[in-house]
Length: 340
Image (cartoon, rainbow, N blue to C red; front, side, top):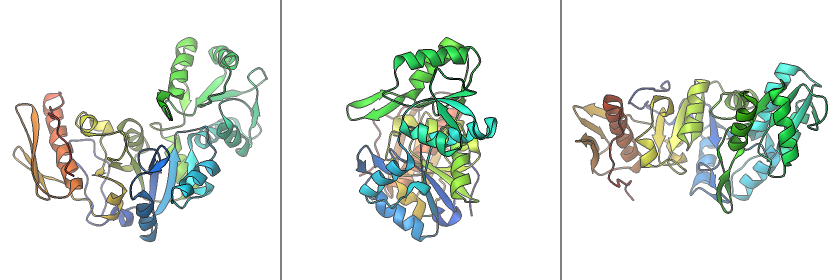
């Protein structure tokens, strides 16, 4: 039994493992399957077990720079079975938007890296340079895009050229830390031109729609670590979601989540796909599940008891969201950390 995505201060529940309740897991990559060049602990084993349970797996990414085959090769290096048919990128979603709007053969200015050029070409469109005649411009992360091309594209967008952006991610992970992402360029182009792009990547819904189109599945589940892309994107696409705590979201981010950023389910890692998903019980001011009790008192959150770490996260989330919804201010956590 499954539930629909929640927008109140509660979590959904499933009496059977999610890998049986849903037929397609749309897995975000960085923070869910890997972190940088290393796999998330046990992620390869969890992906294998999910497939053995009969669930399809798709790997989705807002990164428009790398083609699917390159992403799949990286996953295989980490021990995760993948090929290019199981990887869907924001570049592919952007190319679909362009093809649907313009038709095959349309000339499109491509401002980005090789993965975006490949996606546009595969969609039957004609990628052209920024100074050539075109019906649209598509932009994506590209570290080698010249400034002169960005300037020319900005002027053409201002003058009416239709614009699709692969994503609006403000940061991009690099070997030297978080660096400015494509969203910084998008904001600059918006400010100059006064034009808002059509966005393909999360939290907009085209990437999830393209994933379902390519990979099938009548009961999809979005799985991610970011509230403002993965979970908000699931709401936009009207699909259920699982938040895993192996990436950028921690206690501080979780307790401030407003309704459009709240997942249907919550687990410590991808192992949550292989288990039932009980929802906490609310009794007065207490939120209880599996040996844990969370409550907010005088604006501060406290958790007592013992049990599974997944259940700890769930009582924290529900207690914090109930507090936020009642008073409009996040509960203080006072350095609260998960067990183990």
